[in-house]
Image (cartoon, rainbow, N blue to C red; front, side, top):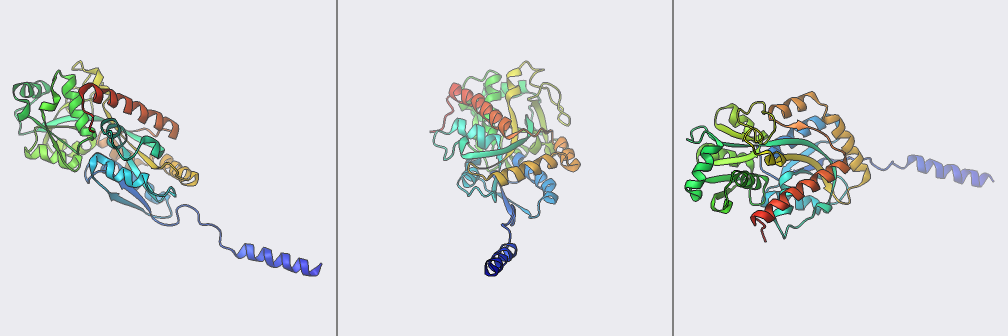
Length: 324
């Protein structure tokens, strides 16, 4: 009996002495931004990371992994381990436009587990302040006169910027949108700079990467895809011009991991997001770039993303924009 008691005591002591399994995260977490610096995704993700920093025991490492309209970085996360140490700043381009346009995309929407979409922002079309184009009517007149001489800058084939420009041109009656010159670049920050420098005629992208250019009077907004005027962007709304269909043209950003993301990591991220979207500095920044912070549940995020995909898929099929 004594021997058994001693053995049990030794066993209990061993259990107590054994280190507990490490809780997530016990090392830095990589957040992949699938677009270049200065763009909508980059600005949003970095603002969010600043709000997340105090909430996590380990730092966040932000990595811009660009290419293929957001597909390169997204594929890297889809193929990563689901342990929560490689996460994605998913974006409208990477997860609704790309799947709608590219037949051979190396990932599907089901390859990701969404923690939550947290940001919605409208699209703004803009030209250089040095341009003779003062309005959408001016732009459309130039396109009708010589479509090949008019160019729009984007962050790549299959990006939100490409489909936004095409959707706007189509809505304003341009029948052959493919005749307008497409200038694909590495990010929407670079695309905005190309318009400012005169390399491209116009850009249609989310409000955030254009905010500083507009504030500094380098770019002139000529359309916002909202029903009501957008603070900081003195331009007609799509609704005021009779183009209510363009209200569906919005950007969004969310956090996602691989489809086998652990429940522990997903729940931790969910808690972080719920606190981060209340951070005053984060909210102030997002408002300054025209974005609305609205944290969706994981289920609502998936439903929203799928609905956006359907909207863009119909447009792609209608205009014959599918990339084989």
